[in-house]
Image 1: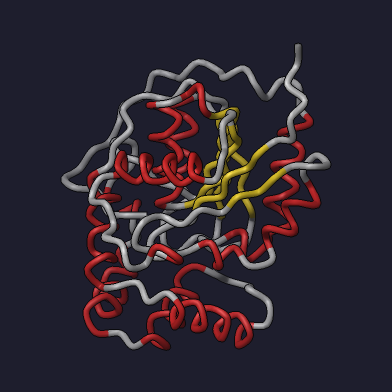
Image 2: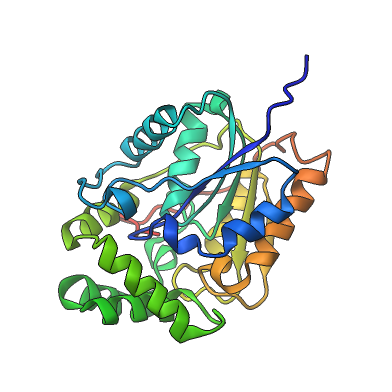
Length: 276
């Protein structure tokens, strides 16, 4: 008998970001999903409502933290996941280790070892800025710096910056947790594709993670890749309607479920890769 329960979508954010950073995208996605779909936006340990907790230094432990969170919420059936950046690494590992718990995953602007070199996983022009922010940045410098690194046309900029500063004031992520998340992301590698349907979304204007990271992953794993022509790293902020539309079209496509076989490609693994 087919499962008639409403679909559950889990949204996972990236490094130092929390559920509140989804902003109006949650409502935008909700309107594009099948009627009755549920959206849950858990925080990774160290971020958001869990800011007092130590961030795990392994992505696999972040997966277990999310799974425990969902069990506590009474989620007891397979879910869909939309995740970006570090959150997409968590989604990938979740799909690799517990494929029976997930229906599909949408990965936004992620980068994975061993498919891209570290200077693509974190673009060199951002090294100095990130180091300065982590070591000595004020809240205003931190949020303004992240906005400049990750968005290109975020709408009313001052209003968004004020909202992000409010989130930081309520849930001040520690520098130590930032470094722990950075370390977890840098070490994570996914040597094989999960047995879960995947969709990749990236943006040509990403100044944080090189767009080739998603392209390499798409080639290695035989995945669909849709590229936004102008958005920055944080596509849900820059153009959430575009992301929601890609998801809706993928769900409507009856051919989306079978996963195409990975292609034979040469992986690139240079030293310890950078985060995002």
